[in-house]
Length: 237
Image 1 (cartoon, one colour):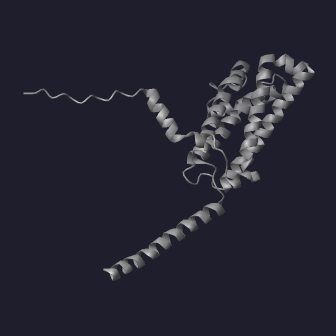
Image 2 (tube, one colour):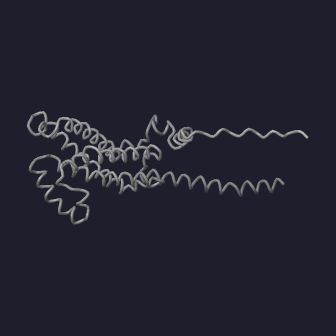
Image 3 (cartoon, rainbow, N blue to C red):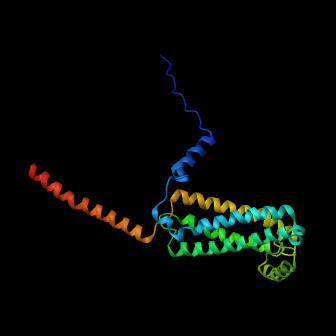
């Protein structure tokens, strides 16, 4: 009797290989860094997301400088006042552009075409940005921050989170503001941008309607030509 050799077993793939293949399947380079964009992206309503992102970059840049220099610098020097004002106005612009971006996305139904996660990450970004701004206001180390923290602590105590989110504790609020919450905002926005690259920018209603009409016309044309072809075949037979 001849011994039968078993076929060689395939070598197990490393987790890095599976991760790379999954990443390339979800976000190929032509989607992640496309050569062009649809013509409707030039509309002003699609610029609001970019303006929000630009404001966030300015917030992070000025915030890093303020965190490195400290409260005495941003209160007692002219350059510190300048960067403090830049940081404040960048926050104002960020919330303005983000709110208008959310409302425009809502009224244009930006969750169409399987883009629900794109809409959800954008909304969650706004929710996380609110406590980020609040912790920044109470970390100013001036009369405004003292008044805001003493007034807002009652609301936190009423909701039951005052023991974990103490607005009167400068060290806790400062660590939340300069480290934990900004990391969360940047992480969620990164996921948001990757989802936008994956699914593409949502088209206007007019373009989607025209595409649906064109698709319906082609289906109707194909359905209408099939019986004629069958009849001709039957006549030939």
